[in-house]
Image 1 (cartoon, rainbow, N blue to C red):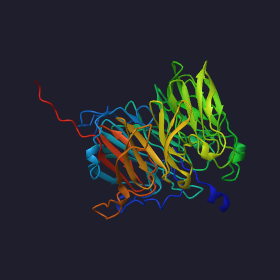
Image 2: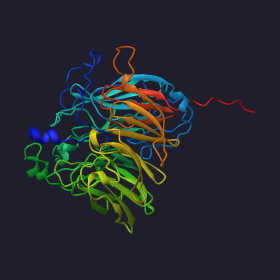
Image 3: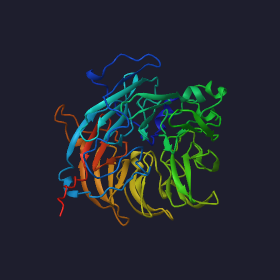
Image 4: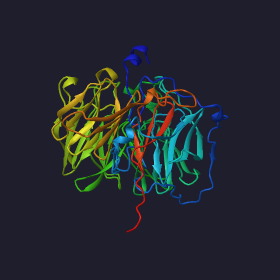
Length: 491
């Protein structure tokens, strides 16, 4: 790929692939291990029996079992956010160094699961969610080098369902292991099994657990496409494996569908028109299907015309309406599904500066009829804004020239800027309403005097049982966002 193409190619991903990142963190001496031979795995497990014991001591809150949370939309049902805790910043409970990766953590049963790369291995680490104490780790060899110089770690967050943990590595290794101790249940090499041609930045679409199935974006290709030189994505053809569903317990393929290549947008299942509907914002547009049977319901083309463009943010739904958004050329479109077919309610047109919303790698959040999030492709043209989703009307924008990710909780927005600014805002459709702000990149770690967090901060904030988890390039931080309610004595 020519330098001119690389210089103008500024793509990042959902599940948090990066653009222009600083040098990735290297493992510490304690983490240096011999490279694993092909197929070899290691597991350092605590003596925990199945099913996994609930380790939470905090009495209220909800788990965060997958990317963008329990509903897959970046929202939390927890209450009790206290702005007073932000003076000068929310209490920092613990932090831990990270390997090379972009994904955020997953939290279930008092366990935090973080997926990183150390050396030549992708490592899933399980820690106590309240203390950061490691419980077990599991490693598998990985062979991946990014074509554009971005880091070589995993992009996807772990997914937990029925005491099983699923990871999807940057080179397509799909693994199921036990939550209790990290022991492998099954594993698939999806690149080899389905003929996946490496796209711009490797695998970055987090799977979705539905009933007894794991829905996975694959995007394989026929043999002829696999012989093309690296980076020639325009000539790569699909082979009908855009989506593959696997039995969660055994890894057996249940069905496949979709003649399309993969994107960086993570999968979702929503109740649309009275029935569960699976949604995949693929490279060429939206695919909707019955997640139980694999029957295709409809597809809607939506992609910028240039080769060097990607779909990365996940679809947003409101009732029977679906919002698609990209940052490169065509912006957003709101669809309404009637009789299992989409009709356009509104769509962006004209110059980019007139588009209602241009989601890049960060999925915005919906509060009522109003959408809040980062709009724009690069730092120079990015802002944080609010639109009314029903008609695309811009309510306000803050031209901050940086990209942000967002979490909605208790009527508030927790916004993490890519350089490390953490903000608490009210979800106010009339104006930017900042309640508190802290520059995490200006805070120093007591042990090494390095910034607590550094660029790129592209993973969305995560909240579970009142604890807020944010990550940057080298470190994961755990703050108390919602104070633990005291136990009340009986009357």
